[in-house]
Length: 239
Image 1 (cartoon, one colour):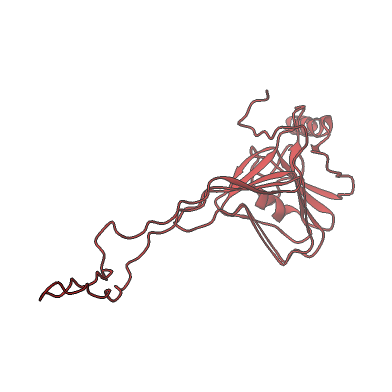
Image 2 (tube, helix red, strand yellow):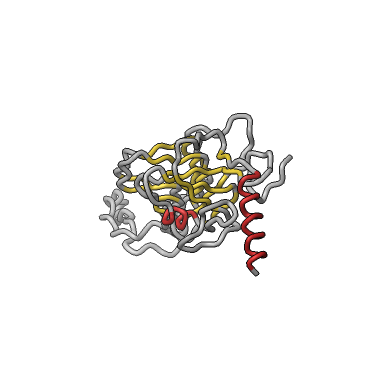
């Protein structure tokens, strides 16, 4: 059993040393501690310490990243979220990372409503190499948001693309109180003219205005996508 354990450790160590982890063109040399995240990983309180045992979710990677100079390296792929990722002060995130021998520059895509939240980020905190997509709005009159940022002067975005989904359609107009009718017409002979028509206080069904159509998918902003490289995900095969 001991021999098998040593062999497994040797395989993991060999795998970790066989490939140089890169995240686009980002300079990772000044990072003193790293946590790895991959769609094929598993979350635990100790995950992400090497590329052979990555965390599955970005949020768990942030939780496991401790100390000055720690950063989370997120492997390429799609991360669909039920709740937005909460950024932490001083914990940088680097996306579009390559943990294997592929030569293609795939991207890390985060999808949510919103996908990311940043609040009170005061220390230098980098968000690099992500495609951040806001899910389609679920309710009428609701906006599609990719990222929400507040009081975060330390946050630095690099080579990220922020894109909204479809906004919610507007709600239907409501009934209004009818106005006073107009003046009656001129008398004809001994008969008075017809009274002016008033707007009904309770209009019949179908006479109320309909809400406007929600905005379609729209790229809102970009801090510089890779030049000369198409955005790719794990669901798209290279051309």
